[in-house]
Image 1 (cartoon, helix red, strand yellow):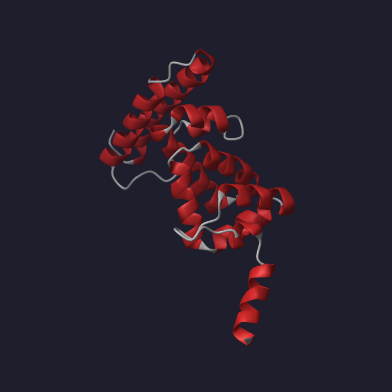
Image 2 (cartoon, rainbow, N blue to C red; image 1 turned 90 degrees about the horizontal axis):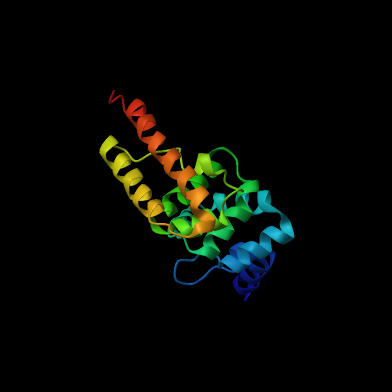
Length: 175
């Protein structure tokens, strides 16, 4: 009985983002995270999620899929990030360009500045070939956007992605 009561007290004291975790991946639902950010602020929620590395990593993987609800979570969390968490969140949103460029350009810009977002990951894949392949996939996905109201963002993003290829050459000392 004491263990059950202790578990209840711990659960009752946990934030909605942690307590509202799904059973499948043990990560919070997007609505729970957004509610928690609204109630407690992004810094407190990011700190709590980041301290639970498995949950943080699961959230980042969901953001990479480019679903609108998870991109909205990324936008809500961004003001609470710093250093490592900021870089990891940025890289997840950037990776989502390959999966769902329309959602990324509609939902995350300007909270994630377009030129930064489309300049590639802060922490690129381990090899030059993998990094260039990733940028090529992003470029192909972004180039496929045919929605007129996104044409300027598309074109600006493509220019930044193209420039990132030169940055990768320097980063991997391929010049």
